[in-house]
Image 1 (cartoon, protein in one colour):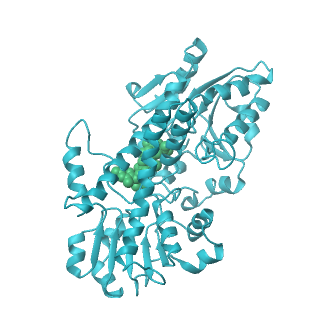
Image 2: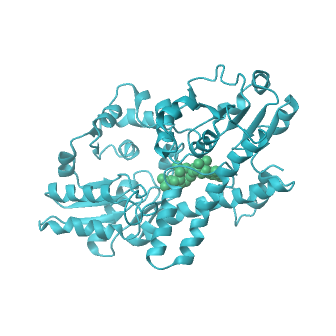
Image 3: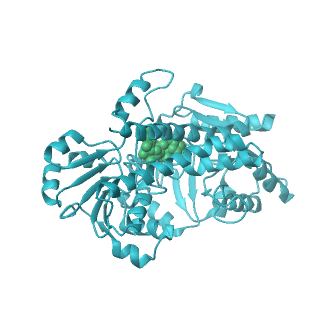
Length: 446
Ligand code: UGA
């Protein structure tokens, strides 16, 4: 919304949320206090805030004033009832629709921005038009394809913008209206229009394909380790084939983020709902491979440390699910740490952008052990000063650039010997670490 406001000074954008603390943070004079860390975002907010971009908790007033409403609420995986652990929880979407239906007094275009199961627009349309009022609602699907860490760049220069709408004159007019918003800065040939269901399904499919690439290369990383192949060399060799392409072939400790797992589980659940068990199983495998990769990495650490990490200090570098974000949702680091903690390791975590409250909250959420025990076993460091002292092992969990720049010779000197490094992101120079005298392991290197 900030990018839309920055690019379309003539459009007034209200961002509303019930959470007053969040809104206050978005309004904070100190742009370093914005709730989301994203390179370039504070400049965009600075440009538009107070001009045509407003953050408030006054939801009803904003609904009433708007011609177009983007619904961008959470659609987490259900944790209860039918579809538990798989289906998307549409509670918040439905609440939004009911609130809009209650408040609206003039015709509106409703844009689904949240990622939703296929045919949710239909449910939205049902709720919106069931109020008996004269207000007309047109529901569009406009899934978002930005990736965290590069969100601003992705929004400024998207590969494509996708708009799904009804194939009726009213639907076409709504599509045109949204098209005109994006056309302020996106070339028309990159603005695709489809029917609503294709648009909804394309979002799930895009994430499923991306995640599948990571799981595919990660599955081969295990084979590379067992042989003398090098996963980066394999990725480079296959990526040169223009049909395969070089992107998204970086082997890792496992993909994280709020979307891949949730969207694939959603796809699996949808397929099952339609009786397509083979389709469901095919995509479920992508998640299973990812779980395997995280477990495999933790097991590698334990095995290398002579099959016990009990009481051993292990430093985890990085907690975010990827670099340049403070988002930790589904981050591989959480699961690897949990595994090590179950083996009674003493874990020290350092991440340049993630707060210690977040790290403890992520671990507590798993419910594997008590909050007190997490506090006792995990130490969150604000800086790297002294964290390597007497450590048995260091594991790179997020590919933050600064980890490459560290003086690894000095780190080695501080650690207990024999010292171990486990590179879960393939960013360190393993040969150099070996030369320093460390036992170095990287995913997918024989
Ligand atoms: C992903 C998609 O890339 C976006 O297009 C989509 O809009 C977004 O989900 C969403 O649905 O909201 P995001 O999760 O922010 O974006 O980040 P990615 O760059 O896709 O990374 C996801 C995970 O895969 C990270 O943990 C990353 O480290 C991992 N990854 C990615 C790899 O392990 N290897 C790779 O080669 C690429």
